[in-house]
View (cartoon, rainbow, N blue to C red):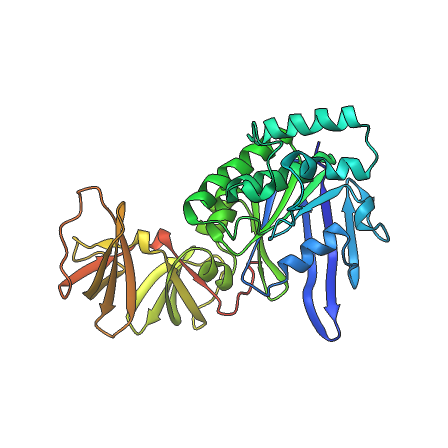
Amino acid sequence: MGQDVEISGVSMRFNEVYAVRDINVHIQAGEFFSFLGPSGCGKTTLLRLVSGFMDPSCGQIKIGGKDMCKIGSNNRPTAMIFQNLALFPLMTVAQNIGFGLEVRHVAKAKREKKVEELIELVDLYGTGDRMVSELSGGQKQRVAIARALAVNPAVLLLDEPLSALDLRLRNHMRAELRNIQRRTDVTFIYITHDQTEALTMSDRVGVMSIGKLEQVAKSDIIYNTPKTAFVASFVGESNIVDGDIIRIDGDYALLKTAAGSFFGKNPQHMDKGETATIFIRPETVFLATDSNAENRLTCRTKTISFEGAYAVVTLATEQGQIFTMRLNNDGSVPRIEEGEDIKVRFNRENAFLLKDGGTSIA
């Protein structure tokens, strides 16, 4: 069974540079939690702090309610899967999986039974006697997972373990990882720079930037209701336009920009006269049929990229701003040609205004 992980006021400083700063998050027992962010944002450092490979400069980490201060990595109820997997190439699959049990002097019969159970859990039937070098990339991933689970960790830490796989295998292993987590009920803490991985697998996601935790929420909230400009720009794609607020209309505000004036949600309750950025997802931009509708733009089609289930249309406004529109390939959209002048629009409910620089909502 998994245990909860409580990270309270944790910072890690190298000389005068903070790798992570004032991180506060409570990860529930049995939760699949992902830290998402670009390279250098501090997510790997945070994982190493939880694992015990490093001690924080300040703050507290508790696992299962127990303070981990001065408890080394070997004595914590955690196991870690590294990006390079770190499997033993001269050992068989069974020997790799059972290595941690052997180190702990578990009896041979009990060890072999546990290895058999884990081989079944990760769908590696018939591979126990094979060398690791004979396995495919996906099979090696399963061996690494089984080896980590062999020591019955309460918390499994995963450092971008799918990054070396091709797209198709990566998509398959996402589902496999999620399935294994649900079957074992172990707490998974996963770090990645891949937003699709984080959004599809996780119960909750924590988005990080420059050592700070910008937002923690369920995947749909992260995507549809970002708290900061960084989250809105990093997670998913957006059309981004700067401007000045010229009117407040309840929970919405009207932003005057070089491309026109647009209404959008105002979650940070900014006032008239403030500078803001409006974010519009490409899938919420569509062809305008009502000449009186708000949030309309006249654009020229620059490129059309057909991607099977949908087409991505790049547009240029009359003022030269670039907009992107994503149209579903469902037969309902009129054919659009490159170089054609069209009118598009978006609903105020699908746009949101945020302060530049990632200021959190109060």
